[in-house]
Length: 387
Image 1: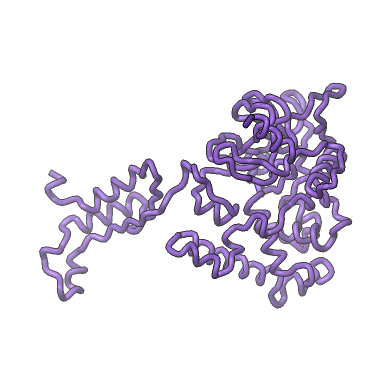
Image 2: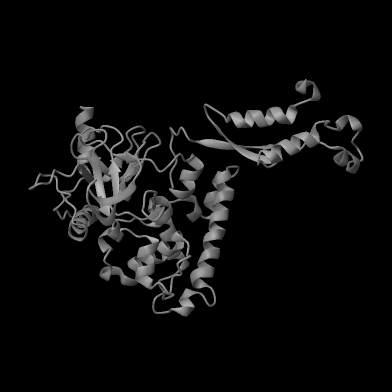
């Protein structure tokens, strides 16, 4: 029946934790799990051990979206039934790529403490994949990271491909992103007097190319997680294993961090943690939320769009520009009848509210912002309405 076919499809993408299947992706999955167990002292086996419960998740190379039945690539499935609130995973911060790990890798005198988090982690990603390669501590993690064309966010598209989205706000956002990435690459790495010139041994030009820079940012934009509960404030991190979990607009689960230990005794370390936001059936795909993102945002940064996306929106630009006497005097074709008697009051009200005279409002398929209606109402207000 259909249930058996669905289960067979899900099982096809699963590899045993200790199995080295001929399929390269299954082998990479097994290597990642083995690395996490060795480097992070994590118990990820599917059977119980002394004092350890079976790990509830398994990596699948071929997941399917539960709503659309479309392929969603690598992901994590529930090995057994999972209850709301169950702990799904915990990853030591020591295994994550962060600004701190990047500065440690290159030297704190090389990467300044004020360097942007994205730029720092991008440098480390290029170093681990292209410079160190087989010698990288993170090789098993690097091996499961996709190539650019597997993610395919719009900022990696050619002008010809981008032309198919003509009329969409994604085009302008993509072009802006492309220029920003090139500008930052030149300023930090490739330009005259930049890091490739200053430290050629640490930043060899044959590896720190713009192409590899784009790959690093494709990984960052599509996989990096903002951890908000760190002791020293928010931290951007690439989190092995956790970043295999796919997005659902209907999920309320977010990956975050906590101190290691129990309520009585803390070790001083920190770890990444995820709890289930609902129950999952055995072999059901587990989801997290990447945030309330529109399809334009998802396509730009993650390379996909959702058929059912409650956060999909279109920006509507509203301009409030009531005509004052000064405006009329500059316009030869206008008359006193065109003057808005409340013009100066409207402008003053908008400025006092901390708003600009031109505002973009997101409009959704089933709702629109109340503030936009209030804004339009103010724009059309007449002296009679104030009485």
